[in-house]
Length: 103
Image (cartoon, rainbow, N blue to C red; front, top):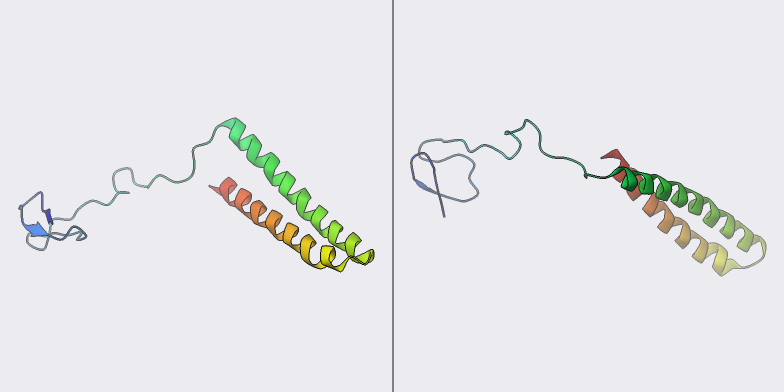
């Protein structure tokens, strides 16, 4: 149980307004106008993120080339299974890197 700081009435811990006096509890973002967003990073971390994004992009292209070369050589398992798995793993990492850069 929680208690209202204004009238000391008992209330649920999840309520945002006191049922007795109507006291409105401030939200976490009203103090500064906006909540804290993003990840604090150093310049070195930003550089590593850019390099990782480039490496993941190149790895996606290499995975496609690997699949095409394997298929042209008659290696169906490598061309139709391993190549796409490598491509989608790299693509997933690329998406994560790009979303982190947006923050």
